[in-house]
Length: 458
Image 1 (cartoon, helix red, strand yellow):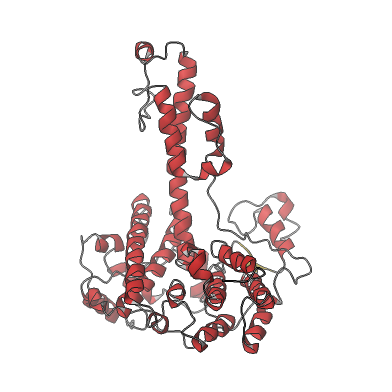
Image 2 (cartoon, rainbow, N blue to C red; image 1 turned 45 degrees about the horizontal axis):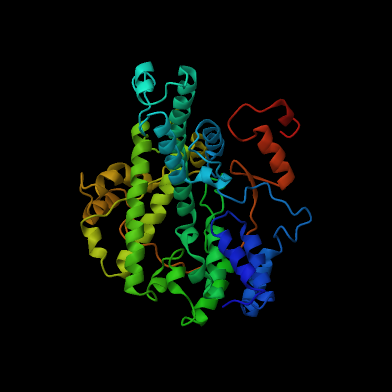
């Protein structure tokens, strides 16, 4: 059990799993945990953490970042629930949190619908409303047509709001999982059972949650020198480490070899279910506006945000799925079903930047364009065995193993150097948070018309 001084810090680290904290600030929290006696770290780990924490908000003179420290949350139905409580006698006043709970919202819609003789799902304003005789038969004779229509419209809007809320909550879940895998789903007890494990998982999750930078090169790797130092603490005491917790964020062969088959299977089932959910999201985005598969450059009408969030989640889930199959000795499954990676959509200006700097179309895009679509593969509508993927990779001179088309990601052999988290405005690096806030509020780098107030900044 953690000490009285350490437990609040462990809970702070656990809360950070569902947020978007800067790695520097998580590093400072780990140092605070060490100072409180909650975890004993080696001098090399302390030096690495101090290197990152030197740029934490607590140590910076302005103590401020323009970046949101949370993933965008959908707007709940608090306002609609308040209106329903005013119009329907059977609906009580509910706390604010109820507006984010789809089950409670649906229960209110159903209960309120009973008051006016409406069945859940009856949303056609022309066909599903009761006429005067039907209202009288339902005991609503004292309710005027205007008041009845007001209540009917509210419930119809609430059902539409509920559908949007469910969609946005799923999208937020997909975004978080794409960034930091299943870290945000970890319960507190296993997370905090070993503080060394908690420190590594929290810092790795913060690194995974970092925003993409507008660049024509690779993005930052998650596993940097601070993560490596914390991981070495786990290597030094494998009997103490909660490897099944580490596997939620780092599914390397080294980690998975320490996890029981039961825990591996449980994780595999979860990732398999998540793959299917993301495949449905990708298919929905595709059906709304099919993409240019040959280039994956954004065209007018493409929902690039939804596609890129789902693509990142798919690739994260696929990497974990491949690693778990291999760890369980079941990678023969890939001989029959080997769904491909999904590339993100690229802005036309970034594609032009690639060409101007001597680059070109990434070979993975060519492989993707010739393979069956992922949702078709998972539903069994089209076959995509490992042999087919190997053939397509060979045609485009891509190593199917090294590029992870047919095998798990290799274990990281070298940690990336630490670099402080930049202030970003739509992916563009800005010098300081105050300037970033001004540029963002003015619409700079957003692709939209800038307000006049932005001219002095540009």
